[in-house]
Image (cartoon, rainbow, N blue to C red):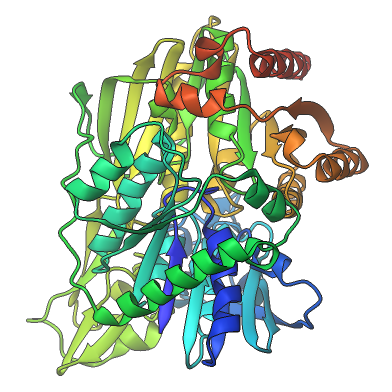
Amino acid sequence: MEIVIASGKGGTGKTFFATNLARVYRENLSENLTLLDCDVEEPNVHLFFPGQTLEKEKVELLAPTEIDQAKCTSCGKCVDNCAYNALALVKGKVLIFNELCHVCGACSYICPTGAILEGKREIGELFHSRGKINLHYATLTCGEGGMTPRLIKKVRAQGGAGINILDASPGTACPAVETIKNTDLCILVTDPTPFGLHDLQLAANMCRKLGKEPVVIVNRACYRDSKLVEYCRRSSLEIIGEIPDSREIARAYSNGEMIVEKNPRYFELFSQLGEKILKIAPLNRPAKKPEEETIFPQGEERAITSRVNSVPQRNNHKPAELVVISGKGGTGKTSLLAAFAALAQKTIAADCDVDASNLPLLLPPETQEWGLFSGGHFAEINQEKCQKCGACQAFCRFNSISFKENTYWIDPLECEGCGLCYLVCPHDSIELQEAINGKWFVSKIKFGKMAHAWLGLAEENSGRLVTLTRKKAARLATSDQFREVLIDGSPGTGCPVIASLTGSSYALLVTEPTLSGFHDLKRIVDLTHFFNIKAGVVINKWDINQGIAEKIEKYSLEQELDFLGKISYDDSITEAQVARQTVIEFAPYSKIAGEIKELWQKLLCILQKD
C-alpha cells in the first residue's frame, strides 16, 4: 500500500504529518513500514530519525560527457535536435551545458560521426536506513535541476511490502506528479490561509487529472474565514482530519522532534487519523472531474510562445534583479517580496513560482497581455503507420513507451518530448505535436507592473516558463523609473530555482529557525555558490527558536554571506493575506513593518552599490 503526503505549497506541514504518521504506525502496526522521502531537492524526513545507520550509493546515468573534436565536423545536427538547449555551436565548437541536459540520448544518436562521447554522470546520492521503519531518501546533485524526476524514480523503487509512506515535493509540476501517480491514496496537507486554499485547489485538480481522488488534512486549523471549508464542500473534497495551530507543535518541529512522542494527546490524534487512512486507502475511489480552469483573464491575447531561448532585446537600461528564494517553502518569501514592492512604489515584479503562483493574491493584477506557453513537444504514435518494430521503446531513456495489446503506446506523463523516438522510427509513425504547458501574463499592479505565469496541471518545462517570465519582466523594465526587478523564486533547488537564480544581481535567502529550515538553507547556499551569485540571509519568525536562529547567523557569517537581519513572528502577515494586502499596507506602523523597512533599505544599498 502506497500513501503519498503532498501539498500545493511548501510549509503546510506535509513532512511534519508524514513523520508523525510513520512514528504512530511503527508503534501500532506489525506490518512492514517504509518511509520514502521523494522531495529529493530538499529532503528533510531523515532529520527526524537521527542516529540511524545510513548506507549510501551514487546514482548515475549514461550522459554525454565530452565532444571528440577530432571527429566533430561542426555540422550542428546535435544542436538543432536538442530539445533542452543543452548544446551550442560556438566558433565552430560544440559545447555541452550539463545543467540543461536531460540525458535523452538524441544528440549521440543524431551525430553522424560519433563525436559525442557518453559516460557516467552522477545526478545524486541515495540513502538507506533499514529497521522497524525502513527509510530511503536521495539528494539531488547541485546544478542537476532537470534530473529531479529520474532521482524520484530511484527513491520510489525502494518501496517494499506492507505500508509505504511517500513524502512528495510541494507544487503541481513534474516532481509532485512523479511521486503521486500510481499510488493508493494521496493526502493533501493544507492550512486555512489564502495561500493554502489557492494551492490546495491546484493540487486537488492535479491529483484528479492523474486519476487520483485526494483527501485533505488541515494543519494549523485556526480558521479566519470559512473559505477553505466551503471550497472542499463545493468540490466534494473530503477533509479527514484537522491538526491544531499550536506553539507546542511548532517548537517541537523546529527542534526536529515529533510531537507524538512528546504529548500523548497528539499520539492519540495521529492514531485515529492513521486508522481512518488505512480504511480509505484500499477503496480505489474514482477521481472526480477536475474543475474548469478559471484564470483566463481579460486583456490582449498574444501568439503562442514556443521559443523561450531566443536572444533578448538589447536594453541599455538594466535594473538590478533581486531574487528572493528559500530552500524550503513556507518561509515567507512571497509576503516579503510583496512588501518590498509596496516600499519601492514603482517596480517590476516577476512571480517565478509558476506552479503555485501566489504573488497575485497580494498584488492583485490587472491583466494587460497574456498568451499560451509552449515549452516543447509531446510525441504520439500514428497506429496506422506503426509496424511494431519496437525501435522507439528500445531507445527511449524515460521508459515512456510500453507495449500492450499488441500496440505501442506513449505515456504522456512519462514522455519529456525529447524527440528521440521520432528520430529512430524507420516508418515515420511518430508525430511530434507542440505542447501547451501553461500561460504567461503581463499585468499592471498598484506598485508598477508584474510578469507572472501559470504552469498547467501536471505539466513539464517549469524551468522554461520561469525563463520566459523573467524575460517578460526584463522587457517591462525599459525606463529609468524602474530601479529594480523583484523576482519571487520557487522553493527547492531544481529547474525553476536555477532558472530564477541564474544571472540575477543578488539573492535574498529567506529561512526560518527550524532544523529543516537550516538544513535547506545550506542546500540553497550551495546553489548560489555554484552559480556564483552574491547572496544574503534573513531569518523569518526568528523568535520561534532563538537557539537555531543564532546558529543560522553564525553559519551565514562563516559562509561569507551578508547577514541582513531577523524578522519577528507576527500574525499580521496572515491577516494581511486575508485582506489581500501587503503587510506594509495592512499594518504600516507595526514592529514587523519596521523590520521589513530596515531590511529593504539594506538591500537597496547593496543593489545600488553593485
